[in-house]
Image (tube, rainbow, N blue to C red; front, side, top):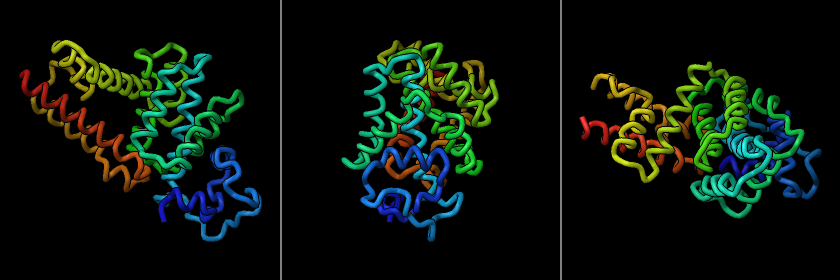
Length: 259
């Protein structure tokens, strides 16, 4: 049974508890006829189990997308479109889509417990650094949805990354890479695309061919879809990771051709 089937079927028994359990419970609403209080904890998957992490990742991602979108005071059409694009990429069924929308709306609420949610998310991921990275990439992409990173949104995301263990240098590098991807995907001039390609790979134009290849291999390894799913990325998000690796390869090929 998939992680989704176990969530809706009650097999998890809301074993994760805490703020994430409360957020997911609110998003699921009346899926459970008898309510949430009577669910058994027996047979729950333990901390670090793949399907448990997948459930946690899904819950945190859509809730934080809503939180970041609302952080500058209003949710734009572009940010909603970005959330819907992620849902489309995941090929969510109608039930899953409803829950994802509900999670997005939970994150928009005034008293959303963001720091408690992040603390539990980090604990549940059990030092899976690649999972935390792709989570942040999805969140940053939401902020970039309208073509720019609002100052307030940047401050909020910086605080999120800090709570997840990122240093200032790591955060700046992440923003630079994702800015590169955003511009690489645009209808940019060849010069702008080359610049964006270097940013996407996390290197400068002065790097050697050896350094370039190392950066390319590192990025491909960090975003390998099968490896990410094995670590707890929901299977439905495999297309997001695949799209990322395609962009990384295209950037690398463009630089090699230019050189």
